[in-house]
Length: 365
Image (tube, rainbow, N blue to C red; front, side, top):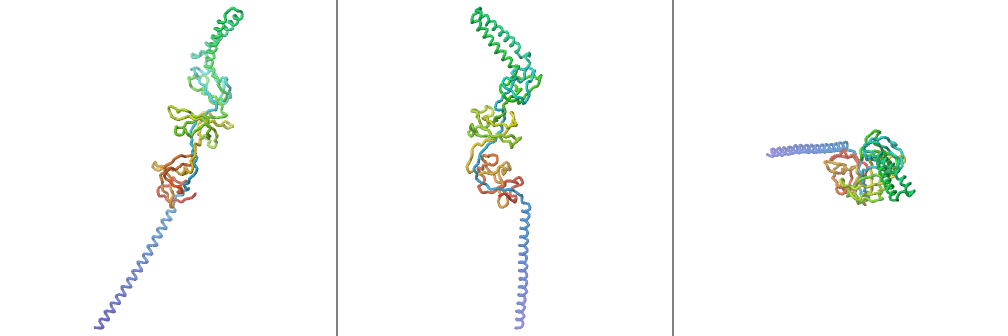
C-alpha cells in the first residue's frame, strides 16, 4: 500500500516536471516571438521613415514676420511729350505735299503738309481772290482819302472789308496748309502723297520729348492717396531695368463719365537717346502710404488652390495648406489680414509641388 502511494507520488512529481518544462519552453518561445515582432516593427518604422525621407519634397521656407509695410500701386498709362500737338485735317482733300519726315525738328508756323488747294472742299482760291481785291481797294481808298476826295467813313468801310477778307483767306489757307503750332520733333506721319484726308483724323504729331508725360487712371477709392508733387516711377515692360523718376503735376477734379475713373498726369525726364516715345504704354509705380508693423508674406509664397488664396504652412516636416485673407500689396510683399500668426513657417519656394500633408525637406530658415 505504501509502495503504491510512493509510486503515485513519484508519478505526480514527474508529470509536474514535464508540465513545468513545457510551460517554460512555451514562455521562452513567446518571449522570443515578442522580440521578433518588436524588431520587425522597428524595422518597418525605419523603412517608412527612410521612404518618407526619400519622397520628401525640397522647399525653401521663411518665418512670418511683422514689418513696416510700404503700400504702392502699379498703373498702366500712355506717354505723351511734355508739349504735344496733333495735326488734323478739317476738310476732305488730297495730300499734295509732305514737307517733313519723322524725326525732323520744327518750330511754330512750319508747314507740315499741304492739301489740294483747288479741290471741291477748298475755298483757298476764292478767298485769295477776295483778299487781293480788298487789298487793292483799300490802297485806292487810302489814296483818295489822302487827296480829300472821300470821307473817312468810306475809308473805314474799305478797311473793314479788307480785314474780313484777310481773316477768310487765312482760314482757307490754314485748311490746306497744315502748320505746326509748337516747337518739337515730328513723331508720327500717317499719310502719303495722294491720300484723301478724313476730317478729324490725326495725320501727324509734333511733340517736345525732352520731358515726357504719362497719363493714367485711378479709381475713386485710391484718389485720396494721390497729391500733386507726389513721386512716381515710370518704366516699360520692354525695358524694366530702365526706371525714370517723375512727379505728379495734375489730378482730374472729376471722373470720366464712361469709366468713372480719374485721370492723373505725371512728368519725368526722357533719356539722352529719347528712348521713351509718345504713344508708348508704360507702367507707373506710385507709393501711396505706409503701415507700421504689418504682418506680411512674400508675394511668391501665395498660391491658389480650389479657388482659395493661401500658403503652405510647414510643421514637423510636413506641409499644410492654410487659407488666408490678404490686404494691401507693394509688388514684393502682401499684407495678411487673417489666417496666419507671427512666427509660423511657410514655404516660399517649391510650393507648386506640394499638396496637403506632403513630406518636405526644408531650407532657408
